[in-house]
Each structure stands twice: as structure tokens, then as C-alpha cells.
Amino acid sequence: MGRDERVDEFEMARRLPDGMRRDIKYHLCLDLVRQVPLFQHMDELVLENICDRVKSLLIPGRNRDPVPRMLFVVRGHLQSSQVLRDGVKSYCMLGPGNFSGDELLSWCLIRQFVERLPPSSSTLVAAESTEAFGLDADDLKYVTEHFRYTFASERVKRSARYYSPGWRTWAAVAIQLAWWRYKHRLTLTSLSFIRPRRPPSRCSSMEEDKLRLYTALLTSPKPNQDDFTA
Image (cartoon, rainbow, N blue to C red; front, side):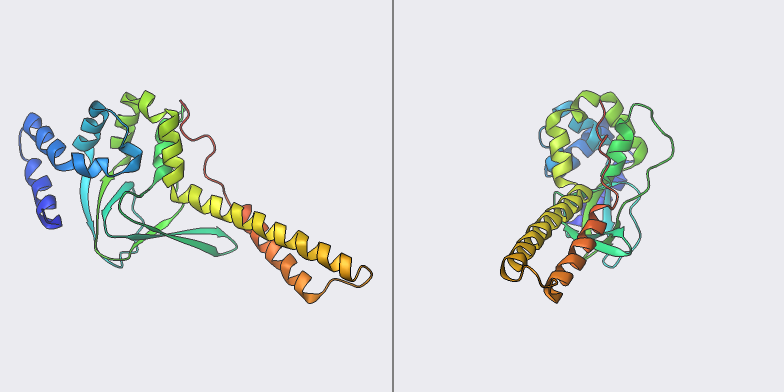
């Protein structure tokens, strides 16, 4: 089935009676929803409600508008960019099975529900014509409210953090910082052993500059640690 055909079928299903519409959307969407690791271990009732509410999307190449919903990539690739600190940007590619907008999932699961939507932490650019499906905030809120036990499970927490672009970026920065700290300590140890009374070399100064850079990156906003409050 082509991508345009699937979008047309979604549009046709909207005009049908509710019961028939739900059955058709479930048939059209189930395989797509199951491609997303976040949903792979959820029971049929949860998947049925997700399928009833997702919207099929075609994202043209070079689209530079932020996507205002939780978005799940089916085909193609999206480039996600995130400003860390002092204008430094981090980039990652989202392919089939990846998602963005996990801030909405945290927003839906906090105990004191806030009506204002959370700010987006990244901007998406379609690297090519990309097929995806989206869950708007109200639809995601409905599913998480009715199946909170599923979304608050440890398995879903781990899966959401593992595939979250925000958490992956933060983890990559933390690993890089640890590596530069290790190299910096080795450099200082080597210099003090070889020339204990001479000032540090320019190499050491460069290492310190890199260390300061990665320290600045690490102090950038960390993904919400109160995610998935049951």
C-alpha cells in the first residue's frame, strides 16, 4: 500500500459510522503502531485506543516547522536539532520506529495536570519525504488517563527514555564529558611526572578549554527527571 493511498483511506474512514471507522482504522494502523518500540508490549485494548486516535501524516522534505504533537516515524528520516547552551546545537536522525515529542508524554502523566502545553525541546526537519503518524495532546491525554497503569510501567519508562532524542542527547554529552575528564587527568599526570616544575603546556590549556566546553554542555537542561509519575 502506497503512502498516498493510506492517507486517502484515513480520510475516507472519517466519513463512516463510528463502529466501522474504528474497525478500519485499527486494521490500517495496528502494524504501524506495533513498529514503535514504545508500544510493542502494550495490550490490545491500549493499541486499539491508540489506533483510533492517531493521524497519518506526510511530511515533505525540507519542512522546517516544529511538529506540535507526539510524532512517530514510519518511513523516511527526520533530523532533530536541539540547542544545548550558548548557541551550541546537537543533531540526531530519527528513522522508522523513532519518535519525538516525548515532552507531551511526561506532560500527560504528571499528577497536577497543567493545561499549558510544554515547550518543545527540539526542531524537526524532514531529510526526505517522510511518513509518520501523530498523536495530538488531547488524544495522548485521553489514552494515558484511561491506561495510566500501562504508561507508568517500568518497561514503558525504560523504552521511552531509551528512544527519547532528548535523553539520548543528554546521555551522549555526559559520556563525552566523562571521556574528556579522563583524558584531562591523564594529561596532567603525564606533565607533572615529566616536568613537575614547569608550567602546563599549550596542549594542557587546550584540554582545559575542551573540558570547560563540555561542562557547559552538561549544564544544559536535562530531560524531566519526574517523567512518568504514576
